[in-house]
Length: 336
Image (tube, helix red, strand yellow):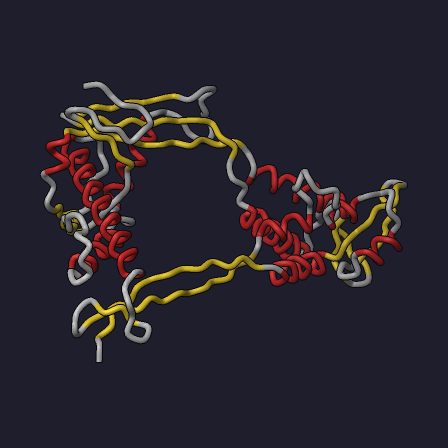
């Protein structure tokens, strides 16, 4: 048995597919014929795709396969590594590469808020914290300490990690003969021939169902409508519904606080606050939403910023800019 590496590829006896997860009962809906009257198969296909995502046994198998490589966030390979496991007629392969994580900017902002909340809690308990003092009845933190903490948080969300890609190969005959599979009882996730076989069969049905759904919806778009409904027979049709969701633009929030954009010359607000070459008067003029004070620490003048004002500023930035996501789905409707 020869393993084909990265590409989706078919040989005489073997086929290779991406790996996903299923649960409960999934049935083979076949290939879309082009006739939208067969709405029951479309609805079954959508159900199949929905059943894909949360099967505990399949997720456990993925985690087991990854652990078998011996690589994790604390033990990363110096160069790409392939780890192969064969049981029966099926082989799984895990490719592990070291990669720079896509920064989780939401995590960075949330951790900064948690940090500020932690300081507020401790000082309320009369704890002494270096770099934290009270000015005009307000708890403040030195700007350079705040900047340092935020830069540490950002470094954490941008640190190197690993990416593990799982693929498998299985006999073509096994894949073609899959009619349905019952995954209502989660499997253990152990490395067994039975688990490997179930995974391959379930994944095959997922792939078929997803292709059917996409083809059916593409055909729906091309048909004439009655009002806003595309009929599939004399009594039933599907209505296309679009929805829009808005979320915080976390990149914007982060770059306003500490600019991470290497192509921009703009300083982040915390960089300005911590800059000893900018006067307190100028800082107050440029950034009036912060409560700013000046303290002499070991003979050196330092800018201190009100903790509550920083927290409020983060919340204001979260409200200033959003990201919009558009989604489309089809809803079954009875024709009157």
